[in-house]
Length: 628
Picture (tube, rainbow, N blue to C red):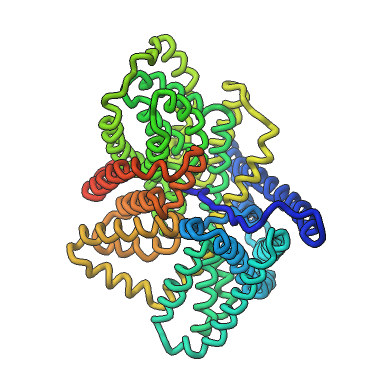
């Protein structure tokens, strides 16, 4: 799921004159420096956490400072990664409406998406500086250094994002839409500031104004989701409450500082390694040898390959990028229609959301307190149920496929491919065993996977392109920054909602849904399908997970069972057109026009919905193996 971003295309190739050329030069220098720093931080995090595992498990001498250092570096990685993402236009946002408006209006909206983001950064930066100064009085327990070394990442990252955003505006191909966007942003900020005295008496109606009105307007206008949340939260707290904005910065910090979230960049990097070393290709070729000669066989291979690779990378973009280029050319040769390939790829993206070490599972564990190990165990079988539903659709659609010209591999060839693929297929089981057996935590286990992949790439598959490593590290940092900044902003927004009394009102409303447990699950499915299509899974989970999971427990739904239900519901929303950004991510990876998949995808989505209802109705599918 992680990694679906639509670039903010406000800039054109920089003109060769004046301010735009100077801005391009500064941007290139600044961007190179920040990208080098983020790449180094990812590499250092791998080394620090890996050293902690080795010291504790092999030498029985834990490094008491390793987690603290990793936490400090992680906040810097997240903030600098957010700078890289803003510079590249890779912050997650919804572009379904923006892409359908006339070109002139689209250019204006692209510029507004950037100026609105800059507006928030200008408003929050003074409070971030104050927060870092306040943190200077705190001394860290293990390293015994001022906590300002960690907290300074917030104002530094925000200041660099301001510079990066300003440089993008200066490099814009047209001055007029940028000027209009700047004026519009300034007028909106001024209008809300002047309306402050009138807003305070509205009480809880302000929740609709800010957390529905402003968020929806910004999201549909193409403003990155993180900044949409942040603007609404800042406006609500500053205009309708007496809360110091220092508190909002603290909630941002809290949301971005869960050590469990350090698994996000490490698993993203692991996914890139899997593709680069040829491990993903080896798995796919073995599966193709088993099923390639049966009707719809390569479609079954696609479903199975996504299941296996999802258990390794934790990133949907990495999964799709590893599989589509290998399978799609052969599938097209056999007569598969491009639209059907795109539709099935999207459906498998939703189907494999619960396979560990899914970033969404890690996020749920970090914000709700549910056991990561339990989520990892509970996620395997539900994904198989939805995969079986997709297999039925494939069987029906390809039941008359002509395979007369497709050669059938010999047993010797299958055995050879199985031996080649065995180390790659073993990796998901190595990762799960390391967590279950207590060798490493859910955060640290990714370093075991990285070490395993490096050794396999160098010694077994003999494919390890050292020249690609810097690019992979920067891509990891950019995606990490986009994800973690969303989590920080959503955490601040969730705190604002909680302080308003919204969570208590929601609990009463959901507890009173007719039908008890089943009514609650039904409403949750509908709600999270909608949330998944608009907000994506991670921000939706961070925002509503802390509110909904206690209610689920109150009405008698097991927290792991509920996690599976809401993850699949969000996955269906995420990968279903017209709003689901995951669908457009699959289209970009497969290089297929999104329109071609529309007539094929609904059969797969119906199958996923049936599978989801079965998972919801039979809790054992999710929790049956938790005590084994």
